[in-house]
Image (cartoon, rainbow over all chains, first blue to last red; front, side, top):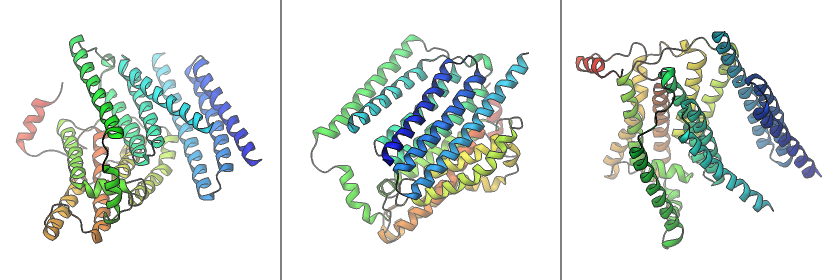
Length: 95
Length: 324
């Protein structure tokens, strides 16, 4: 039962990754692409992490997984911010 | 079913790494080439993990993708924007390089195939595993790197040092970048301590699990690079004497231990099984500091402010040899 639920959650996470990637390819400009990628991937990773935690009996490894998720969350937020900031400045210089 | 899924995953990894390598080599845009190269490093790290070589996966992720990526990205900035498009080699040179690469691929494929199928007899890995108990550590990779072939590792450290000395000779460090985003500073503030702790963990755990001096040193260097990116003033005013000592302490301690062992065991770097564990830890600790210093200096791209060669021969060389 738990396993089936975990797999369902992981697939939900994969769906978010997929939509993020489609957004990256299909959306028109850098800012909307960043918007799609950062948000969708973070939710996707959260769901995948949750699914793996449900399958992983060792609580120590569960804590590690949560830490990995938090680190990726922070890194992706900051790097998206930096890319967007850089692009904004370039735009301003070009105007 | 599960096996089939793993096979699909593995084949996609191989195809992906080939595609990334091809794209990275064939693109004319340098920025794009570097970005693809970093992605290539990450995929390679996953492949190493799939091959059950976590030590290499760690090293590839930290050094191959992380530090090399930072080095290449900062190197791009040194070029004026007009030259970021790669100039194509003349077709003869291109053919020679392609031919040599193809030859290398054939030789390596043959070597792997030969190793897997042709020769019977004692495998190198079996020899290693049988000797691990007397190496002082229980992680076979560390046993090989720091004990069985300690001499090679010493020379690898020398290679790193030589490369960095060349960088230091050629240039002053790059101009610091403009003040970074407060968000990056905020993240750096709690990420750097975390990186330092992780480096210490990797160094310590290398004795019995994947980890070791190179990974730990690269991790420390990435903390320094983050500091430099977010707040350049935090690395300024570092005591240069301490910096010089840190740069060479790895090789110094390594050679010192080697000579000490020579006086005890009549052979350079021949460790006593009883002391090997502690000796390896001491060497790895010093090596971590040196690798971190070397990689950080390489990222800075030259001599830090105030680091001058007082020898007149050096200063004339520097004037004439400065790349235009």
